[in-house]
Length: 280
Length: 280
Image 1: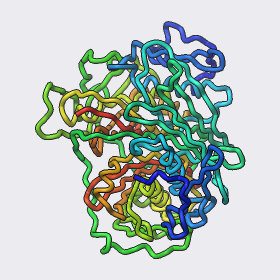
Image 2: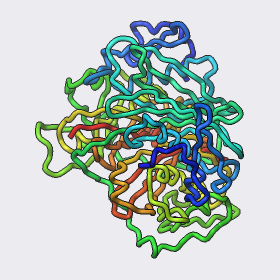
Image 3: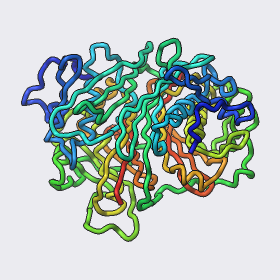
Image 4: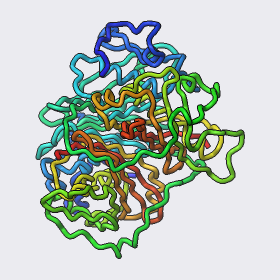
């Protein structure tokens, strides 16, 4: 679990991800910044934005349990500079909490999140899904720094299948939408809910893989489900995940994307799906 | 598209699904009823509740485009009787709308939905996913009326793989979580967004399949993504879908469930995922 000490300013020696996703209390709201370190094409990387919103929930004094399911809707590009976050506890039961966060810029909602938190208990346990095969992290080749966007440099991508090799013209025949990769923060950081949520959005758009070229895209809505609680993450104590992603369909300017994040121990940490706008 | 005439009372000859999911304007809110026809164990079937909430968006005069992605969070059991729905347009852009609906009973939020609507346009189109094999609808054997819950009688289930056969004691070895089935309303009704959303929740809990026995369960959060627009659904003009469902993990009282809904023509109409509480 994160320490719940929102008043403490994150100092300059903090991990870049913690600096990028920090929130500061300002008159009943939280203030965050669209980090230049995690910038994408026309706004900050959605994963970092989502993590900042999730952090704003986790620093609430009444927040209980661990994130279970999080949906973030990206309504409009987040502009450079600061944004405000309003946090509302919609409903609490004995063992679950339902939260909503709105990200405001210039008094308009640019993004919002709903999140279920739950206190998980021991139960019968069964994992039918099996971890995709992969060589150890160190044996997979790192993706060279492409320099395309700042946020990409914040992660080490080590592709096992479907490494990107984008050209200027689309493939004649669509290639596979599937890829998998080892992923870690460039400066290793222990995996927690914030980084898992951010990593849910690190899969390069499936249409880039399928078409073999980069086209304008934007995530519209992303849902991530966590399959581990804080104790499970502490037990895994890892800085890397194996990520696999795929897509089912590209149709009338939208596609889906599904993803899995695995710990090196073979535990499925999170599954994620998103709807992506594309221009092609 | 639904006709946007909320004032018109649904008459007694309307389809049971339209009766169950109707909404009536009451002082700036919408009122719905937890239909006895679609009741489950401790509350109304979540699919019908979700469809009622989606209808409350679609009847808004300013609603534009078709549903693209819908997340519904079920916070607390919905009780018998009526409930109120508040509808809010969080953000509209040129081609998308982000909506939120809260379901209120006794002044508490029992469920809420966020939904993205979009005006879809022609684009490059590609469907890497392939429809699972299945005999024609008429050749698949209907599930006998189990009488377990009222809502089950509102659908025809024709299993192709993983037909339920639940006993009183759990399996020694977990069985497959995967199943697929033809599905239609018992009284055939042309597939639209409302019925697709409801059908997203018709998959029997994966833990019933895996354990071979019925245990207490409850959907916590469900996200459905539509891959067809109203014109696509009109072109398909079908009353049935092929549904396939699976699960990745059961751990610490929660499991996931993933699902696909296919038209008989081979078009992927919707994908869905949900988080399910279980007691086992």
